[in-house]
Amino acid sequence: MSDNRETGVVKWFNDQKGYGFIARDAGGSDVFVHYSAIEGQGFRSLAEGQRVEFSVQQGQKGLNAADVRKL
Image 1 (cartoon, rainbow, N blue to C red):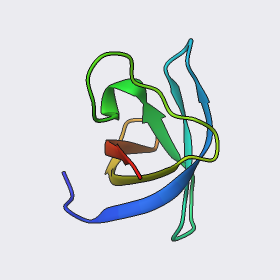
Image 2: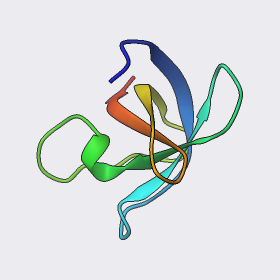
Image 3: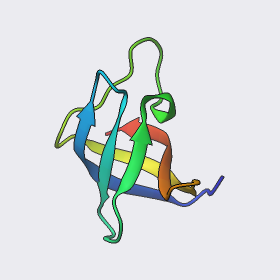
């Protein structure tokens, strides 16, 4: 896992499916986010337009957000 943290804004997040995408402040490709990568206990979700901090990992299908923290 990378220690380089990035910030961004949630483009959309589907609570029923448990995933969405984050637009990176630094630009470049949007990053996939799965509910299991969101810090916290219980039901974990993100809202469209919410600011977040995260690490980026290369996944099988592209970039994935990890250790997602709500700002």
